[in-house]
Image 1 (cartoon, rainbow, N blue to C red):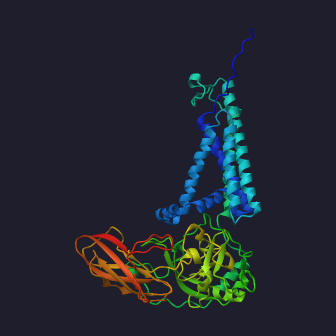
Image 2: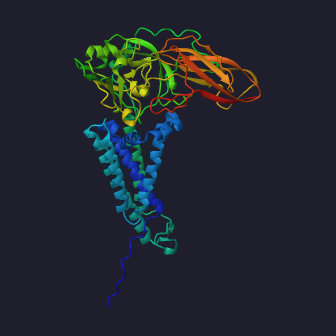
Image 3: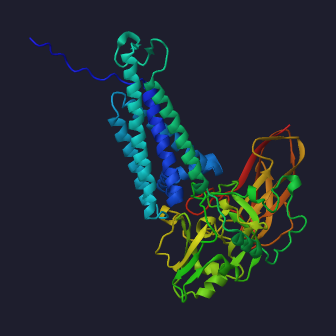
Length: 539
């Protein structure tokens, strides 16, 4: 009688080897996708597209939590979180494939399909952009199967040469080798792993040179920006415009310190030589402007304080700079605004949109700009190079589109990015004030102490600031020298603090006589309100 034995399942790969196959396959997918994206469409890099789509789909409370918790590092936190998720997924793909490559291949392909869907969903990515996630998916699956095969060959070689796993139990991760020498199978797996890791690193690095936000243009284009910055200077900042010695910020914020809050996971890379600005919609004459065309309009430099609607009471998202550019009003008048055009719908190079009330941009006194200079230098890439909008008196989410490429005159029936997510339509900046000194929970000497901070009511101006300690009577603060009604104003006051804990509060009054409300409101839907207070201890 024939001896029939059940077919023996292949021994599983060691868990660490299987996990390594998954991780290296994921690295190969990311690196190849990054490189292909650099060649065809920088914004189609799968990791970038998935991250941007995640930002778009994230509920508003979660976004505001991220801004509060991580500040301007919220994008870094998102990328780190994505990296952790991807690492866990890659390890899982390897572990479920210890007996064969099929389960992991399916998981890698499924993750690749997510990347393809994310790229297809991006409004700022063309048709060719789908090549990056397709190549990334194919590379990930192929590398996974290749490494898995090399690992299986190495495992079979150990069996043939007399190696055994501890206890000869199928599935055990421990093993012993006879002779201690590496056979050709093990060498093949080792060399293959090193080659994949190196190749993924090189491909990803080369791709990042383009997708990492480098902006510029030819030397001639850069010279054109330099010439355009030669505009009439802003009103000089007078002495006494800040109380830096008492703890306020400097009146002009250096470019490196200017706050940044936007939806761009990666700073768009813009080539000035090919940059165009289209002005269309409800206009008499459609305009298609290159940078040289834009620079032919009269140029001005204006000192403007910008504020983010995500700024909580006492928050940091406010800065001031001297912006050089062309009045938006002049460009709109050149196009001819038709009756009924309620908003200027602006679009960024990365697909972000904002809707600015047309009447605000046509106000000569407000002086909104198409800015290309910041504190005497070309706009930094992270602040909108080559051209951005700057509109005094309106929160940035409706008025400060960076990396600007398109202006459409239309009605409010066309919702912009943040309006679709429940934010207010017009976004006027609210009267606010902030205490910068003492900082929260600071320890100060008992006795006479300086309290200092800032207040703002752009396009109206600050008329007074008051402070009080422990709910006592309000006392007037000294105001800094005013520069204009479109900028913040510093203040200081001397208060007596007895030993112990104290709560210091501030409130401002604008030029219209409006006193800052004590009612606390969150940033959603159109900006926070409430008095800022800090607790300190006098010793």
